Length: 201
Image 1 (cartoon, one colour):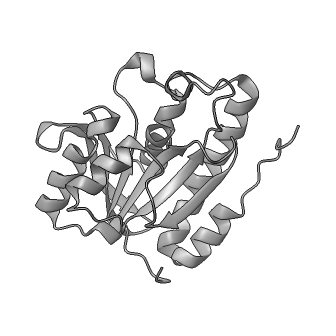
Image 2 (cartoon, one colour):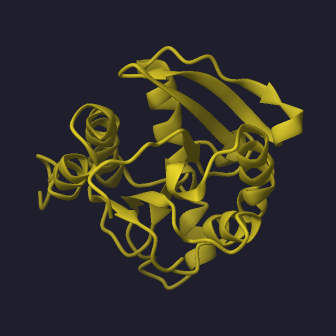
Image 3 (cartoon, one colour):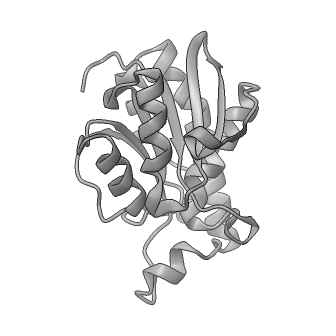
């Protein structure tokens, strides 16, 4: 991972529709909305990119945001055409997504690596010509106690988990700015070292 990252596109993953709003699988979308609000980036439906799209600046850098409206397992249908149109390379992309292997309140930033069975990432990789060389910000949701992953990711977190996740999302939104102001290494250290105040309560 280079110290400097030129992130031109931030993708927030989730499913479309009110019944999926604020579910565990939509944490990437929730964080994208926070970023759009913080930097006053207007988001609107854009059919040619199969998503809700916005363009603006973060800390003086031009950035595009997209929430694919294709459902999770077809997310690449939004990312691929947008990258082709604006000539955005895989290493210039940051994908925000939920992560079963992290506990609620944990966030981790990484470059490349495996897809951990995440259908949104699988679709994006396929539409980037098979490249996994993009950044991911993983938002912990924990594993299903019952083992029923499908119902778990499409459910909403319990109040304590939700408060931990919201704290982590606030920290992620704040620290994403460091990618542009201090470089990817310092941003990664800040994000990966975050611990919520309520952790372990």
